[in-house]
Length: 148
Image (tube, rainbow, N blue to C red; front, side, top):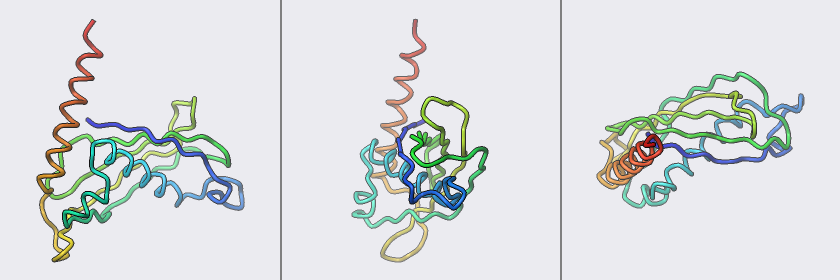
């Protein structure tokens, strides 16, 4: 499992008339978390796209549990639980700094798309190699943390 946490400060422009974060903004927060997670394993979107691969969203889900407000410091915990084949699912949990109870939980599913043909394709070797290394590194760190 690969995890990354991104902090986002809620801007006034992210709120609606009721002074809560507008629900659609959470998908932007998910995107930031996803970009940061991929970058942390050596796969910024620009690198993936330079190899002729796009990652369009084919499914998105969010469960809203509580509201966020202007100036809250949010933690977007982004998780990749399994190696992709032709699709990749990424999970998200958004909390307010210092409070472990989630505001929003969700996921996105992305298809690997050949940029030249516009057709779905399998995850390219570049992606698989970087993710495999990250999974191994994550497993090693997890095992070391459990060792007394």
